[in-house]
Every structure is written in C-alpha cells, then in structure tokens.
Image (spheres, rainbow, N blue to C red):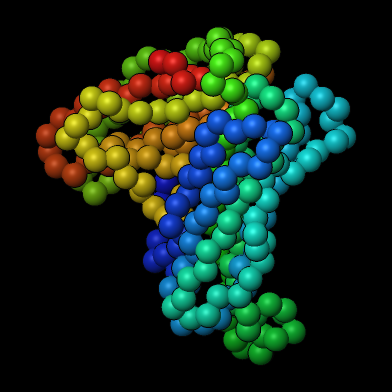
Length: 252
C-alpha cells in the first residue's frame, strides 16, 4: 500500500505529484505551479485541497503559517472531467529549504452528508491523493549550508524475491547539523532504467526498473532523521543492481 496506494484503479488521478518551485525570493511572488485533477468515475465529485501550516524549526512553536496556498482549494468535478489547481509558494524566511505534503480529498457529491445515504446503500469512502511541494530561498550568490548528514548504510541487499512479488528495505538519513538539509535520490548511471513514477496516488515515489524509492526527495529538519523506503519487485530472473546517488543541498 505504501508504494501502490489504496486506489489501484485510479478513480481520481493527478498529473504531477511532485511540484518543485526551485529557488525563490520572499520579497516577490514566485511563479505558481499547477497540476490537473481528473475524475475517472461516472459520478460528480467534491474535491478539497488540504494544505498544512509550516512551523519555523528555529522560531516560536505557537506561530504556524501557511507557505503554500492552493487556488481553488475546493471545487466540483463532473464525471470524466478534469480541473486545474494552481499552487502558490510564499516563503517567510531566507536561506531555508521548504517541503510539505498536500492532500487532495475527493468524495462523491451524492454522499457529502450521511443524511443523503439511503438505507441499505453502500457508503463509498473518499479518495485521498498526496502531492509533495518543495522550494527554497537560497539566492544564486549565496552559498548553501554545508550538510552534516550520514546514512545508516551505504549498501542495501534485498532478500530473494519471486516474480510478481516485492520485498522491502529501509534506509535512515540523519541530519546532525543545526540547519535544514534537502535530500534527493537520483540514479545517473541507470541508463537502462527509465525513471518514472510508480503510481499517480503515491507522491514522491520514484521507480528505476524493478527498484522503487519513497520519498525521492524531501527536507531533513535540524538534528532529526528520516526513513526512506526501498522496494525491489523483479520483472525477470536476472540479478538486478542499481547505484543510487543521494544529493544533499544540491551537492553529492
């Protein structure tokens, strides 16, 4: 479920589950990013975009603010139709990395209230889709912080796995510094594997042939750790090998 999502039939899908604003300034508006939400069902849906607030890791704990805003944050989707959501990024501080998970909640309009459900009628739970949004406020002339990070292991070995099955491992990333650190996984040497997203409902999941990484990028808060999930799902009987590169603060 972590890699494939709860809705394998993709009743509701989005065009992009990873939105990167790149380097922006807090003194002027950033160019908005957009993604398309598609209703693949035969019923009308009500869609809400839930955006969490951001807490400054070095500031007061009782003053969360909104750094990402969705327009519109709620709308209706007709059957077999699509709608575009624009996402704005408004960072409050300079020289920081930002990364947050947004949630799209889609539910049947005919079941927006339990009072509309007839006796004996099945209740359809809402669909949830995650979208990762990221950006930073590092100017091109300013050096980025030197990361103080470590990995729990530099080599991951998966146990034997049958065809059409999957095995999993985890990797821990540790930030030993006092500043946030951005991380991103790439596989520059995997020319035979095309990098694609595994599922439209799993935000930030990157697939390289039989291997998958979740999340493919994010931000480590000061003096914290983050678990990265790895999956191996063989497509043939040949041994598989992948060299992953983890880039911290845009430096290998």
